[in-house]
Length: 287
Image (tube, rainbow, N blue to C red; front, top):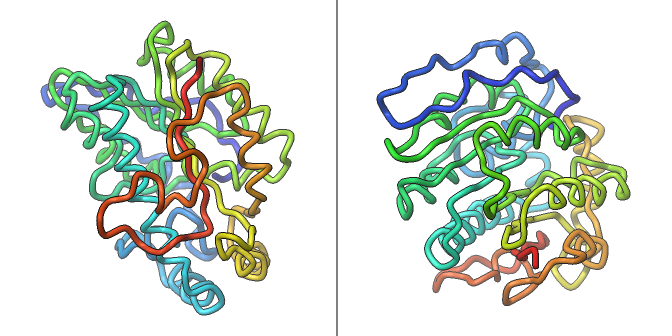
């Protein structure tokens, strides 16, 4: 996530396929194609086309330093799919607040959830201008469901909650998705406070779905450190890894679903799950 850019919502919610709203173009004026950006580099690592030469160069250099990075990117994306499917199909969740959306790819949160529950309501949150420019992909929906996109910063949870409340019913359970986003909140106390603020506004029976890179040796995370140092000198926004103990603290007061906090590739894996990656993932419910 880049610095905060104000509170103008993007076109409002799109309800079904009959309500057509134009994708705002304000993001294009904020694009800086001369510096590698996380959303575009991540897109490059998972085989997407929404990136520039500078993103490819930085992405390749990071991959040379830390070859497992592409496995991390794919594992994180696959974790999202498994978590959303479980919550929608097995837990009856019909509302998702996806903070730190990233660039649209195949099987975004709303597509997975609405495939199972056509009436699911999804709010995406990001403030990366290239994500804003591609938001039309995120504003498609089933006729019975709703999707919305908020151009806002994770550092301002009050604004996110106020605007998400226009689409989501905070008297009913919400799955809060925070995949690979708190690693861009460098101050640990601030990161924990963001989680506390968001979870305080959702009711009992809501969920936190979170992934976060780690430097823990048990998951092979030591190589993250020099790769992240290179990243912070050559790309934006700056990033940090944390210990499993620190990441576990984000779930304080919540009940972790089995198998708990694990490498995201090992959270209820499919038969052909990838290798263990130094990216913790977990899903927890608010009692």
